[in-house]
Length: 368
Image (tube, rainbow, N blue to C red):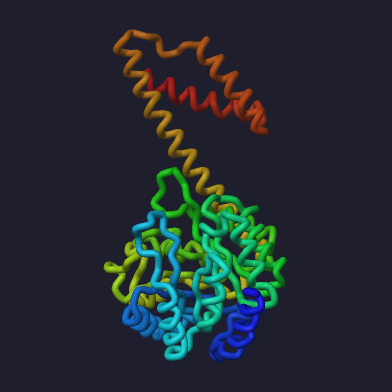
C-alpha cells in the first residue's frame, strides 16, 4: 500500500517542479555543471532561509540540499529536525525557485519527502552498505521516476556501489546518478574521507551512462581543502558538485568544520578553472590513471627515503658495535626473498633484482 501512495505523491508533485531548471533535462544533456548546495542539516527556518537566500545569488547553484534525517554514529547527537524541516524546504523552493533534495534511508522518508514536494532524493553512504535497505527503497519507488543519486559506500567497493545503482534501475527508475563522497580509511590522510579517485573512475568505466558528481565537503571534512579538491574533481571531469553551505557554519549542529557560507562558495567558484563542458570519457580515464601513477610514484619516493633513513640508523649501530657493513649471506637471502615475492605479484624477476641491487648499493654507501 505504501508504494501506491508514493506513486500518487509523485504524480502530484511532478507538475510542481521548478520551470527554470529541471533535473531530468540535466540528465539528458549533462552539459551544465550541476551544483547542489545547502546545509548539512536543516536546523531552523531562519537558518535554512538565510542560507537559501545567499545561494540564490549564485547562478551555478540549481538545487538546494538539506539533511532532514541524519544517520549519526552516537544516539545522543542531533539526528535531524524531521518533518518540520520539509515544510521549510518547500517554502524555500517556492520563494527562491530551487529544486530541492534530501537524503532518504527508509521508505517512510521517501513518502514524507514526496509529500512535501522534494524533487530529488539521495541514498547515503551508510545506507548503500546494506543491500537490504537499498532494496527496500527501490521497492517503494517502483512506479515513480523520481531522480535518485546514490552515494558511494563507506568502504572502497565499486561493486557495492554499482549494485545499489542496479537495484534502483531494477525498480524502473530512469534518472539515476552517482555521488563520489570519498571512502573511510585507517591510513592517515589530510581528508575526512580519502578520495581514492580510481574508484569513481572505475565506476565510470563500467557504466558511462551513469553521471558522477563529487561531494567535496565529505571528502575534505574541512574548509581549507575544498578549493583544491574541487579543482581536482573538475580536472577529473566531474559533472557536478555537492557542497555543504550554512549561514553560520561555525555554529552548525552537524559537520561544522566542512561547511562554508554562501559568500565563501561564490568566491571559491571565482577561483576555479572550468574546462570544456563535455569531456571525452576515455581522456578522463587516462588522466585519472596518470594521476594515480603520479601518486604511487610519490609514495614510492617517500618509502625509499624512509628506508634510507633506517639504513643510516643501522649504519650507526654497526659502527658503535664494530659490525661489518656488508653482510653477504644476509643480503643474498633478502634479495632472493624479494625476487620470489615480486614474481608472485606478477613482476619480472630481473627487474626486481635490478631495483633492489640499486637500493642496496645506496644503503651500503650511506652506512660507510
